[in-house]
Length: 299
Image (cartoon, rainbow, N blue to C red; front, top):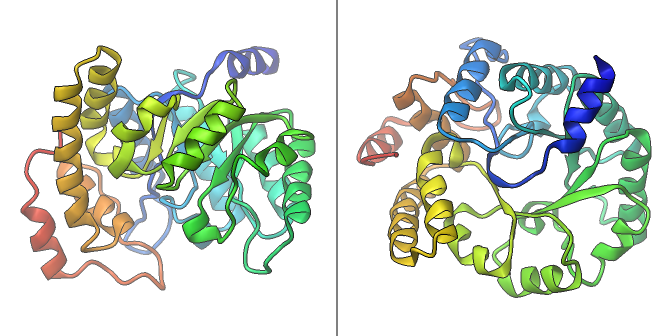
């Protein structure tokens, strides 16, 4: 069975439209595994090409390690081996992230991922070592997560090679609006699997040569982004642009709330009860609900 699992992982490719899953909570604040599995099943039916779990959208740093592993296991189980599951294991400490990576591997994740270690203003050679420790701890590919707006660290064409030199890199999650730097990375590393991470600019990253995207709004409007992806592949730019504009007008309203809070609320329209975000996040207000209720078709 383990050999079959390993073979399946090796065949899985990170590409296409991959939702960065929210973490549903019960009213008492505990992880709601049943609603999480319902969400996975719904997104699979809508064409999800994989799942990215316990990342920023999943409130990773508000979860315990046990919860993060349990969430990964639940998504692996619910996805039934149909698509790859990438587990974000980011921590500040390398040993702690490596331990979480081992747990993710043990429950069937196809790859692990991490933001750079933050807060202490680490030197880049220290960041490289952090990734090496994670990579050495598991037999899975590592997806480097570039999110400079939150981490304060920019992974670019000049320094990415330092990480790739000694790590089993399975891809790059690029969450940054700098398409020029993205183009430089693509040109310098043509074989690197790159997943774009800014939903509002998805279409505009496709000509650069990204392999797909990982995003939070795919939780509730996956079909729109599948339409953009498919239209672009067929050369129908007019349709692709029209749907991207539709998605951006919805994202405009999300940005008036808080993206994770808004995504959870909108999933309620699809029958997925996600609860509130964990403290210290504020619960959604009635005014915010009214704003989001004005959003039309999510598909």
